[in-house]
Structure formats: C-alpha cells, structure tokens
Image (cartoon, rainbow, N blue to C red; front, side):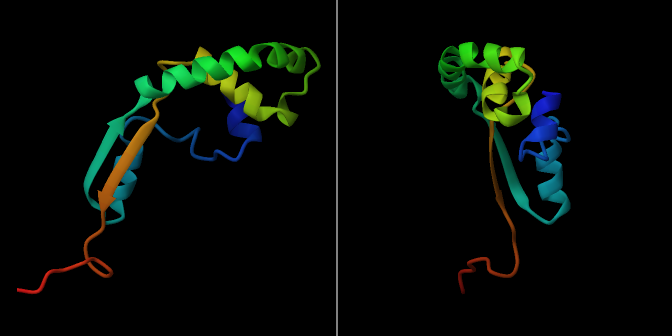
Length: 104
C-alpha cells in the first residue's frame, strides 16, 4: 500500500491505526465517540472490484504505470490486503457552541 500512500489523495492512510481516529476526536473535544467496523460488509464490493480490475492491474504493473492508475492499484490491494485494513463508521458529538440545548 506504499503506492497508495504516496500517489493518492489519502494522506491519513499511512497514519491510521486501530483507535487513532477515536483518539484524535477525543483529543479535540468530541464525546460519545463510537467506532463501528463495517469491513465485513465492504468485502463483497472489494472482491467485485478485484475481479474487474485484476487484468488491467497486471498490464498496468507490467508497464510500471501504477502512479497513473492508483485507483486500480488501491482496489486490487484492498482485496488482497483484507485483514490489514478496516472500513469504519465513526460517530461523535461535540458539546458546546452550536450544540442543540433544550431549555428547562
């Protein structure tokens, strides 16, 4: 996934680790942070994309054109790397300004 980190617009890919986003949100004042792992629900989509992309990926790799087709590289890598990544849904609340407050 080095190529994805280097050539795509996913700057957090290299720094994300289990609990990293939760910590970042809590450090900036968010509360009630909930992280849900949706990886098992995303796996069928990554398999489908892998099936569509594997032949173009092999040609792209043979010609060393990965940086120009990074979505194809990322799609194949996502399926091959299942277990090394997580697809998460994050929900949090930031108290204070802008929060809806019921008056007593």
